[in-house]
Length: 310
View 1: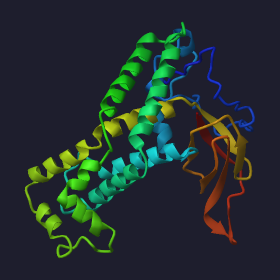
View 2: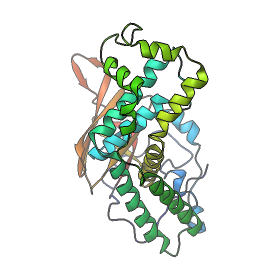
View 3: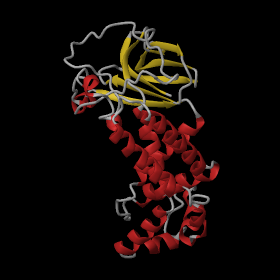
């Protein structure tokens, strides 16, 4: 797969000087450059720029790395949690007596997150900003106009789908089965058939009946999650991965305002990263998977890839 980086002359003020991050060369020989943007921006670069980008095998790389993400903004934190819950919910997978606990647990967690904050408004505002950003890019003479126009159409469609929504999930509060089941789900073993006979009865209905109900419930969130997925795709696609070194297992940096950190750590490293900070400063400390002599810190140098998403 070819990953093409957009390198316009009027780069965003959010781009970070990574000179201080590049403290060491890679120790392991590699045939290709690992820094790249997501294929969301494939084709935006000019032909001359594209010729300078080497292909990379992402499948091979992913097999030897562990990916971590850390939000530096509360809004992005909510987005990532919803994305995670959507993966657990698996709306296209039939709900049966074997997996209903996972399904309802994720569904009720999504409802709770949507009740805590106005996610719909946040996603719409972020997509509006993306639309304005794409308009600015379209004025640059060296960009791929077809690619920019395609992205702009996707953003426009997502905004139009979100706008008619009212309070996301509000209609599900009127569903008798969900309201009763939700009350019991927080109790240890609260979904026994004597606690929630309605749920027990529902699980013994036809698969088609259960599929119809699940589709109706998912329809309440579908437009929101489509817009959310697009916003996260655009957010992640803005930043290159750069090789950095955490000297003695610690990396600290001050930057321009950021929304998200993305880390790709070689699976061979016997430690995991703990990230802390805010939008203009962060630290990454690696902790040993098997602490020795009471020391949790991993004190060896760790070489990994880092992307700073504004």
